[in-house]
Length: 195
Ligand code: SF4
Ligand code: SF4
Image (tube, helix red, strand yellow):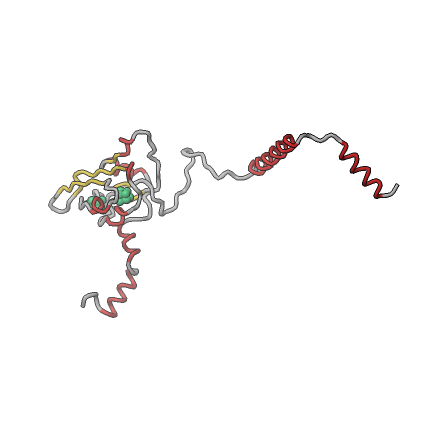
């Protein structure tokens, strides 16, 4: 028997054999494809973590919950109640009342409606005393909006509880002009501006 004859017989036998219906073949193929993906992912390192048992390390410039800070030298509240953050806030969620005092001023009241905050960081940027800051945490989820109306005490408590983000008003403003050393050299050569 020649090779051509054998090939023709094999083809004839294959054509004569009963074949599963097209739908069954499609389903089996889909199941195998899905199992292949499952098997591939079974041995991959997970990208998720078991929060809150385990927390990720946040980047230093993470923009999380807002907080009020204390003056690092005196330990007093850093906020002087100047209301700049209130004026600059686009959705107007900050309200400050100033308390005038002999040596310096304070915030008599300070409220921040966190549920409407845009996390734009403008309030941090304008603060002259680095009093309002962002923290490296978002951990204030709640189903009650009233808990997100933060008063001065709550804002200070957040500042004590969570690590502060890199940004402060002074650092952000410094980034906008030429570096301090370059400015000093410029003044030494050309004299201070306006002279
Ligand atoms: S981050 Fe922006 S929106 Fe939020 S309180 Fe500050 S200025 Fe207002
Ligand atoms: S947080 Fe800063 S900008 Fe806002 S009132 Fe206090 S000192 Fe002024």
